[in-house]
View: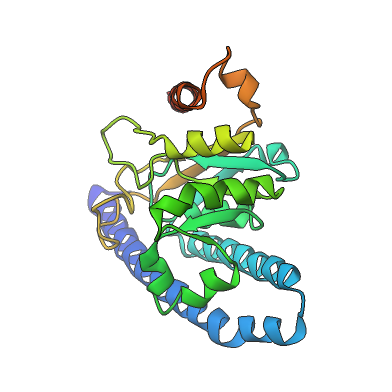
Length: 263
């Protein structure tokens, strides 16, 4: 194959992936609107129990996110491999934490852990395409920072699982991970088991912070989602520490764990 032919194929592949990425965002928005307007109202008509309607809503969201990822893979926008699903367990009183390199990390994670609680930014709750989705699933709003930690701890103590990004926002490419104390504080206060999930993308900068969707990488990105073995708090911190010390020790231990696994 001549060099000019190879170059042309790369250019055509780039154009196709650019189209596929834009098309995927449109489908994501329309899918959220469709579920909000046509699907979720039927749940509340036929399912009387609030707990059951929440579980049904979350399962629908998880399935929809899984289908969305499958569609992106089919379009050739990305490819991926998921490892360690057997470590997920039953999800009871489990804090699921992950690094956050790209915009679609949450899509992968919700498809893997559809019953987990999530913290949702106020902007997402106000989005007309997603508002009823997050309300129907009864996700936790980040609108009131003073109540956020208490809400997270309450959900975990009630026996559920919770998905958090310790960085609080997407990573900045080229800079080291920076875990805030929030996730560690929730784990300490709830005595929850920690389930680390490592996310790696072969194309740094894809859908990263401050990067618009149309700035796609020169090659198709490959995602690796690695679910690690769950870890008890006693395995990460030692000694008789007060809550503040324990939170800091746990945060540093979690950061070391992610840096070690991603090295």
